[in-house]
Image (cartoon, rainbow, N blue to C red):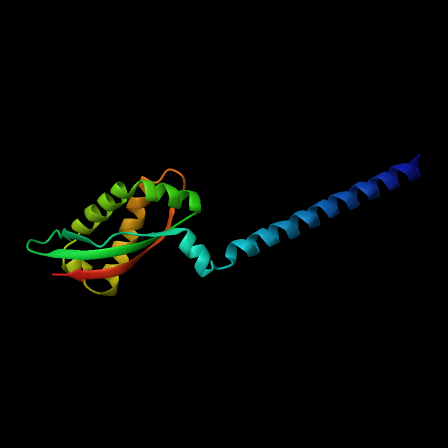
Length: 141
């Protein structure tokens, strides 16, 4: 009976180690997939471009002409974004109009508007999130 307990114990330990090793390698593969950069086709499948939008800025007498590329977390979110174009456009206008001309000057201004718009658009979508926003056209007067 003592030998049987030792054999069962060794088998149980071997099974637990095998399951642990399998879990480790499966998890490692999942992480490797997540870290892989998206291809151009995948980026196109999950992003939308806004129309060229003209709106006043917060500083009197100034206006901006902008267009954005919005990368969404998945294709389901892209479909939702395509159905909510009015809300996306309203979020863009409200975001751009909240800045003054001085705030938007230079690279830091572009980064600021991209981050602010990404945060605002993330509140609009129910099925996913905004991964990034890029300014593709930007003019101020």
